[in-house]
Length: 99
Image 1: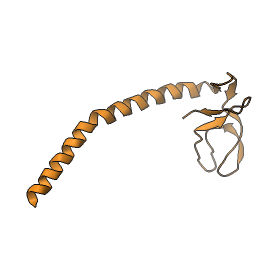
Image 2: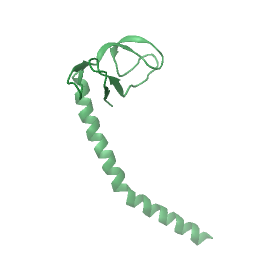
Image 3: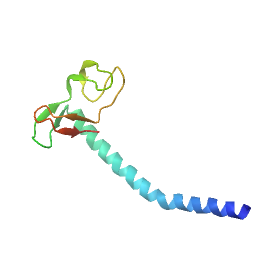
Image 4: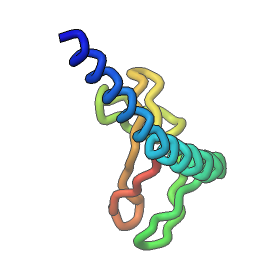
């Protein structure tokens, strides 16, 4: 029984070693995407991919979770700390995914 447990642990460790490059590549891709998104968010506007309208991020926004309306980022609620990953375009109402 002890040899079976050792073989199982060795096999599991081997699988983790084989999966490491895949997870490292996924992490690297997400890190690059995050850096790109951060530079886009610092501009303060997000262009709609459908109609091209420039949507401001600093507006009077209504939180979907708590219902609080406040000026500031439409992506973050300071009351309930919800992070919004998408919002509708102000012109064509198509969904714009940001984060």
